Image (spheres, rainbow, N blue to C red):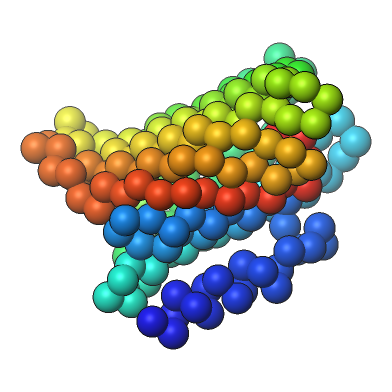
Length: 206
């Protein structure tokens, strides 16, 4: 399994603030999953931002799938804004435009994006992520998140994905139990349902 060991090594070597905002690694029942995120504001108020994300998963037959996206966003004070997304994955490259809403509080944060595929006239998607990290004591916090993604083409369901993380946080490290579920088509065929232990390193208070 050389690809899996290479992925683990890469995750360790990239553990630096300069490269990313957060890293997550989750060995699971179906594959090894890695998620690298980076946020760059263009102004002090975070109205104009660039958010990039790369996800990689390597199954135990050493089949690799990936997604990489760059989100250029403008956000108003009320949390509403617009986003342009450039993306690439195993199927090719594309672009989306959409409207988002974001909110960040002391113990939780939310981001939701309704987007239109610019190359497919009837294709649109919904992406959202909610994180909840209540304080337990002076050193520990809870860390819980749910990520939802759905793609529709006209009245047809393309794919839906749910990622759930339940755990704790200390000194910027989060760890616990992770669940990834994927459903395809109008029949919502379950594919690659995966359960495992996640380890995440965050360089901010997201």
